[in-house]
Image (cartoon, rainbow, N blue to C red; front, side):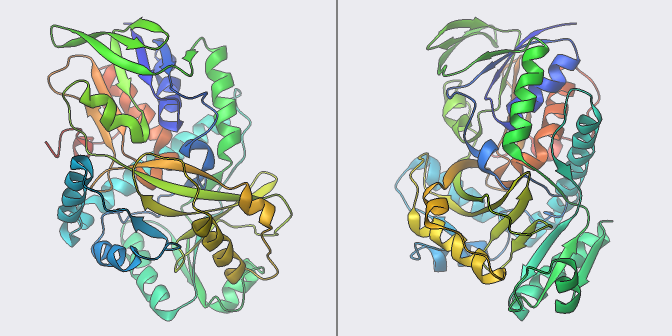
Length: 415
C-alpha cells in the first residue's frame, strides 16, 4: 500500500532511501535544512569499502587519541568539552572499544558493505544513471614496518572473512602504482573495494528522483513534530507543516538533536573530515589509504581527491588550515613528484560524519512510535553504505523481509 513518507535529510543516506521507497510506489518528500549541494556526502573519499571490517571504536584508539589530542595536525582529534551528549558518547565509545565487540562486528560490517556494493552495481546498470564507478580495490600503503604488520593482521582477518587480499612488496607495489614514492615499503591490497565520484552521483541521483516525482523541500529546517496516539502526525518546518504516514530521520550529524524533540536519545557525534581536490593529472590510478597519516587518496572523474582527519569537535564547519596542510604534506610524502598548490589547499572543504559510539550505524524503527524510522551514524562508511541503508529502511517500512539481520543496528541499543 502506497504511503506518504517524509525523509528528513538530503545526503547519501536520505537520497538512497528515497530511491528505494519510490521504487515501492511510495510518495516521497525529502526535507533538508541546506540546499542539498554540500556536506559530507559531497566531500568524502567516494570509497565503497568491504575492506573496512574494523569499526572506528577499536582497542587502542583511546590511547592514540590521547597522544594526538595536543597535536593540531594529527589525523584523529577529540576536543574535550563539558557537554552531556559529548561526555555520554565518549563513555559509550570507551565501553565499545573492546576486542570482543570489534570481533563481533566484523561480519556485520562486511555483509552490509558487500550488500551496498552489489546495489551500487545494480544502480550503475540502470538506464537512469551514467556515473563513474570503478572496481580496482584499495591499497593500504605503509611507510613503516609496524604499519605494515598491523595492516596485514587486518588483511588476514579479511581473508578469513572471504575477502580477496594481497600483500604487496615494494617492487610489486611499484609495478601496480608507479607514482608511489620509494619511501613506501609496501601495501596491503583489498580487491573487494570500489570507488566513485560523490558530487557526480549525488547530482544524478537528485535528477533521477525529481524525474520520478520525489519532492525536495530544501533550505527547510525542522522545528518540531505534531504527535497523535504514538504516531508522528505532521512535521513543523520553517516552510510550513508537512503531513506524513511515515517519517525517516536520516539527518547525519544533526540526527541526535532532531530526535531529542521526540524524547529519544541516539548518541551521535560529528566527526569533521577535510578534502583537497587536485585537478592536474596525478597519474594515480588506484584508491589508497596512507596508513600512518590516515589520508585517503581517490582518483575520481577528472581529478584526484585527498581526504582525511577525524575531528570530534561538535557541529561546526570551521576549516583548520593546519589539518589541511597535514593532508597535503602526507600525500606529497607518499607519492613522487606530487605537489599540491596553495590555491588547492585554500579551496579545501569539510564535512561532518555522524559517528555512533560503536562504529555501527543506527538503522531501524523507534519503539514508542508507530511510524518513525532512523538511518544515521554511519561515520566514515556513509558513502559505502548508502544504498544498503536505503534498501533496508524501505524493507522495514514496506514490512518486507530485510536483506540482512538488522539487530546489530538497533536504534535504541544504548538506551
